[in-house]
Image 1: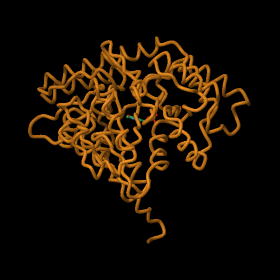
Image 2 (image 1 turned 90 degrees about the vertical axis):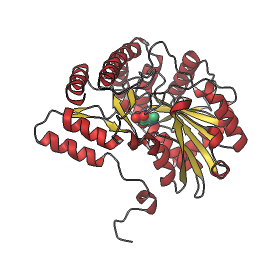
Image 3 (image 1 turned 180 degrees about the horizontal axis):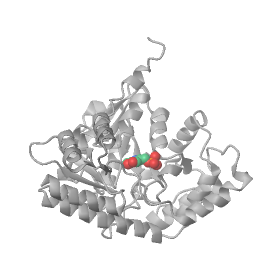
Image 4 (image 1 turned 30 degrees about the vertical axis):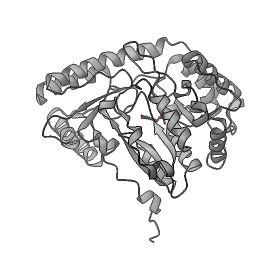
Length: 389
Ligand SMILES: Cc1ncc(COP(=O)(O)O)c(C=O)c1O
């Protein structure tokens, strides 16, 4: 092994599929072309002012300046529990069933280290958030992809998972409202997941990153609202998207107490907890008014409609999602995900994500993020109409 050779586990992570497109974007920008990026899902509006003000006060208080406990401040745990009660009708014990996480990404990754050994696998939605597959590999385990079936509403066909995978599986990653497909959970799916998990001793991780970002009157449930869910699963709740707080790294894990305790044990060896001022800002977000969330959702819904309409005009049958900040659509005949993304960049100078970035079942699709400012979305939509029809 060479001095700086990465571990075999790190080498096993597939290469970053966006790399070639990223280089083309850089070349275009260097040539003075005005590129509009609809690739990444990162809210363009600032964090709500009541959250910023709470942070300002919290950061000025020396009581927040020392090492936080990985258990989290009591105020944060209680605020999360009362949010879950109000918002989802789910009862959480703030003393044993919730702790903060430094973003959902950290939490998902660390759950892999906490629960997977070599020989084990995680069942991971495909297409899906890349950490569902990278996390298991970095833990020295494997990932078994569960294709999301468009015909089933972008859920995996649980009946078709082979018995060897079920026997080796220790974790199952699911996520609704879903990135990248924009799908919301179909009736009865969470119930079937609880059943499967109980039968095969698989810990369910529901990644609840988008529950607050929904449209057309749809209200997203918590997985923990499903009867029996707490016996078999945890939910990762992130403040990143719904509260415009991606940079703050503020999330929580809640649900099965024994699973949370194992995650806590892992974290005491890995990090030193979430900055207490951020936890207090999180309290302000969770206890704050819903008006700003509704305003953001109205903004995204308007952008979504503009994008879907423009795509239909160029012959792409995009469905308007009822949740998330993404439009997921099939590429036109004769294109792969990557060739269509390259065409969008070439002809319209608009960056879109090839669906294959999110797993092999994403091939044949592309994703447009709604988090660019209104005027940029409008401009992108005009360019798509003009140059891609
Ligand atoms: C499904 C999903 N889970 C988790 C995350 C990461 O969330 P956080 O900012 O809390 O780490 C994202 C971000 O894009 C996501 O799409």
